[in-house]
Length: 164
Image (cartoon, rainbow, N blue to C red; front, side):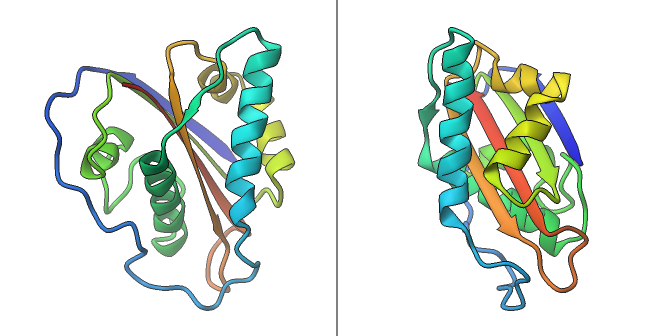
């Protein structure tokens, strides 16, 4: 399952940062944490952009933190949507992390077991592909949260794209 969201607007002023840790630590993970999944997806995105003749996206750690928080939020609060019951819209969530942006996009996915599988799903979806290959974005963060015994999906994936 995948969904995408794109928006453009001017954001002025920094807002407060939030704690990037999950409000409820999950110890009943079905699948082990795969920290390299985020790096694998990041590399695959830039490979796809290079193949399309586009500039590589720059890694921005705060976007990785926001994307991971969103993936954990979807898992822990049992939803799959761009609108978070705890963080609001992707733009509002990015602002909570102190990110100032002039454009943002978000891709979400759930259920895929590997970085290759989630990238294949996103690249086969016109809207997600458009975010990945958009020349308007300059920075990227990736989030991954493994499923738990009470979550709907085995894995939750988030891509946060921005233009500063």
